[in-house]
Length: 261
Ligand code: SF4
Image (cartoon, rainbow, N blue to C red; front, side, top):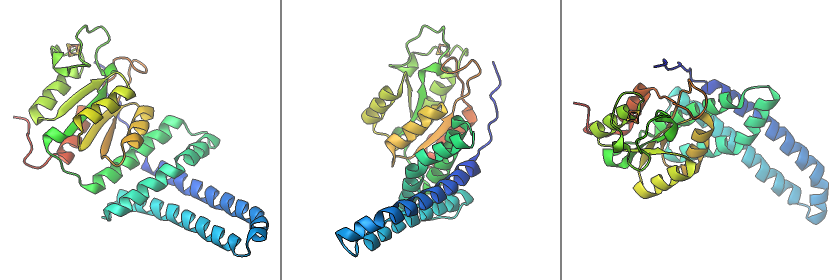
């Protein structure tokens, strides 16, 4: 089988773009405020000051959020409420960050990959621990070998563990660690599975785009995103680094959780 490509985290890229986006947002906000304040002053003399103060607070909160993300990445502990602020800042700036990336001719997938690494760093700082029955491994259907006839999307245990794809390894791992495993054909079904199983944490395997939308959809639920590898192109016989799944399990599970024999 094809070897998994080694992908390096690129958190600095996202942080750099976030800082640039913040500066652009601050300058644009100031420009809009400067242009509209004479009109606001005609409505009420104090209105430009009130609006200016509110905008200043918004920009300051975004700046603080990015600063907290940097602290999380370098390993400084902070309160849970700060985590929410950090998350809010990067999500609010995400469209501007994407736009900035496009202007700088940076591939969208590269930015999304960097976002996933940043998000994973924030989740790690939360030090979430759950019991195995509240942890879900979620992977897309394309991890199954394309010619396999076994129906695994309703029940992953239907896999015969023949070794031709990694579904068997995942079924085995989920069984040994006592966690849920769901293999789904798309994002809508992934959301349904989460609603049904109500996990407290998710280890999600997918491509950049699906991981970003999934992570954003289920926040504040902690999700560790693991990028899949696509040696045969998108959505066909994809693979995942099982070591990263194990790392995620170790991170989320209680120390006395089920371990491999
Ligand atoms: S490991 Fe399971 S899902 Fe994969 S090809 Fe074999 S039987 Fe099919």
